[in-house]
Amino acid sequence: MVFSLALIPVLLITNEFASFVGITYQIVRSPLGPPVLAIGLDDNSQNIRTFLNSLGLVLLTIYQAATFFIVLLRLTKAVLAQRNIEMHVRQNEETHLFRGTGWIAIGVKLGFAETVVGFASGSFGLFFTRRLLRMLSRACLVIGVVRG
Image (tube, rainbow, N blue to C red; front, side, top):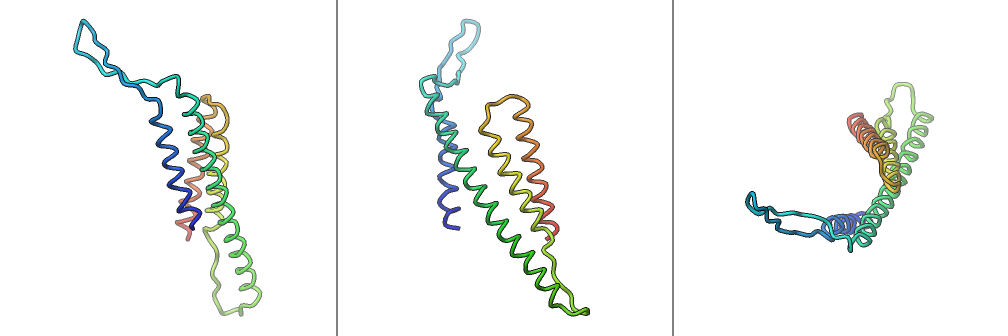
């Protein structure tokens, strides 16, 4: 928990700072109309922006990997507890199931895979793949939460 509380703010700050590094503002005057504000990116800060974006992606990957292993540990405990209950329960007693834990584990794993795919250079196919993995990940998480 302390890991999450420390890593998430650093991740957010890195991501937001990378978004604003190297932004330039210019007022473009046109003889046909009023002046227009032009916003662009400075070429000199491209390396800093790339480094901060990569650092944010690395931190997100570390966070999602840690989350996946925690969920996997809880899933293993739930399966072992379910097996233990089924072996020692009488016929007329009810048992609890671990229901949505598997779906949550799959959703977290797909989220981790989506983050790792982000390290590749971009094209339409890559962007589409990331969006598809993100959608499937969130769908699995929702199913897991709904199932209990």
